[in-house]
Amino acid sequence: MRSDETWRDELRGTISGEVRFDEPADRHTSIGVGGRIDALVFPKDIAELTEVVAFLRTRRISFLPIGNWTNTIVRGGGYRGALVSLTAMCAIEEKDDGGGVVRLEAESGAPLSELVAFTERRALSGMEFCAGIPGSVGGAIRMNAGAYGGEIKDVCFAVHLLDPAVGIRTIMRESLIFAYRSLDLPAETIIIGAAFGLKRGKREKIGRRVREIISLRRERHPLEFRNAGSIFKNTREIPAGRLIETSGLKGMRIGDAQVSEKHGNFIINRGAATAGEVLDLISHVQKRVFETTGYALETEVKIIGE
Image (cartoon, rainbow, N blue to C red; front, top):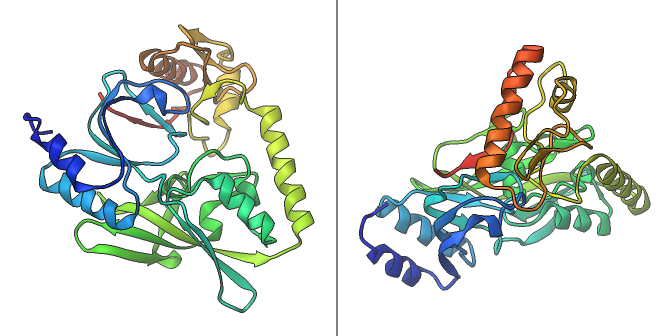
């Protein structure tokens, strides 16, 4: 980050979209914690995103793309640099390539909930497992989101990237390296969209499965509290939530941050939790689970800032 303040005026003049300076992260993160962000930028489209990224790289200002804030925790010291919101880039388009497969093009900022609703309306099968996941397309691709027997890698046809070195490019599925809750991508690339390969189905059957999954989520997850979704990745052998429950940690509380009594792999904000309390609780859970079970839990949420 440059020590002078001229970059702020320059950044504001770079785009027509909104720019907020010293923005509190707790207004945006789904768990409701986090310090101030130097700059929160809202490019209106991909062309403007390209200009913003070029500006930030030229001035050596740290930046990260951000979607729906549902899998992100910003530390109490905030973020030094710019977070670039992709929420304005949310178009969804159906393209029939023939052969029984329908290609669905979605920009990175499109909420998964809208993508699932779109596929249900058009009777397109394949995205049902995403029902109830609160993230965006870009975050789902980056994290290889999955639930109820499906993962993004199963339906991904291609990923569209903004590569600061070469511009916009597309990587086809066969060249993408997906793993559990991750996608291996070159540093500094930003996912700007993706194509999904889906099949024609029966709208009633698709809708029934979507409603079933949403009902299961409401039953099993503490959606009545602010949270960041699953905190830890599952191990190969045992789900993280079960390890946490086995370790006697359900209900464990530090300040207003609490391990959910409904689902052990969720940490909830009971009202006034701080980022420090959430992170201290995460560390405590990791330590206790390792001492009790021998498993080292790895975080699934993205923790940024200082």
